[in-house]
Amino acid sequence: MNVKFIDDFINMCISGSNLGWHERNGGNLSYRIKDSEIEEIKESLTDNNNWINLDINAKNLANEYFLVTGSGKYFMNINKNMEENIGIIKLDENGESYKVVWGFENNGTPTSELPSHLLNHSVKKEKTNGLHRVIYHAHTTNIIALTFVLPLEDKIFSRKLWEMATECPVVFPQGVGVLPWMIPGGKEIAKKSSELMEKYNAVIWAHHGLFSSGEGFEDTFGLAHTIEKAAEVLVKVLSISNKTLNTISKESLLSLENPFNIELNKNMLD
Ligand SMILES: [Zn+2]
Image 1 (tube, rainbow, N blue to C red):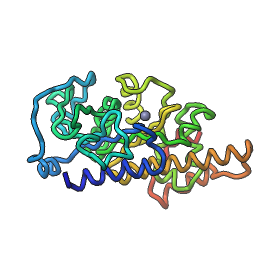
Image 2 (image 1 turned 90 degrees about the vertical axis):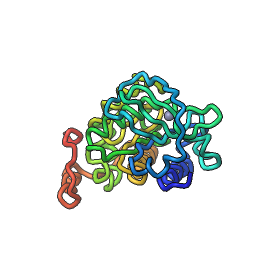
Image 3 (image 1 turned 180 degrees about the vertical axis):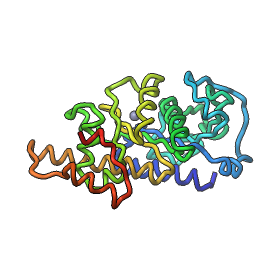
Image 4 (image 1 turned 30 degrees about the vertical axis):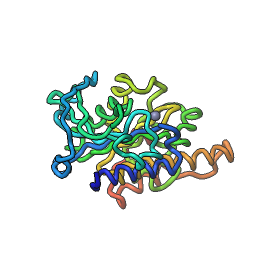
């Protein structure tokens, strides 16, 4: 299908792949499709009425359509055969089951992280009055590296990342959430992630990667990119020396609030 939201979705996958965040079949992406966009493609959708239980409840996503990457599919190949690598699902009227209405050809299925994507969408739809539509998971190398050497605490990661680049407190003034190592792909990690998504637009999975949420493809990717870039700087700083001479002080961080019209999460500054 040749429509803008699918093009943008695929371009985001390729951008992440080009940055080395999607080795093999690593990472996944989902987009809550607008009614007007579904209208545009409705001729291409099929209805097999084969409902699959999700084992979660996302009531506020009832009857919504999502464009999702496929389980086991490689981001680097995504534009070579999109009907196999991605697909569109529709949730039932209770937000408990889904059916495939386009794509996932040749017995494909949505990403194994579908529960995390949908519970995050559910939280973000409520918290942002429907503005957020994109959830992205990437294996961001430097963030993963930091989860081996920093305490797995929201406050420490948020403050350290803010200090690594002046744009960071402006781009993610709420900070970031951090989850300890958990088994991926299930209901438990989905629940814990969505609890953190109540407070943050980005959640780190220790020794695994990053989730980000946003209104569109550009800002969701940009958030992941900004966080990973700050993590890269921090990895370099820690590699050079175990002692830093200078940083962005608490006062300097706070002085960004007025000119950039942001409110920093003060819990990260205590
Ligand atoms: Zn992953």
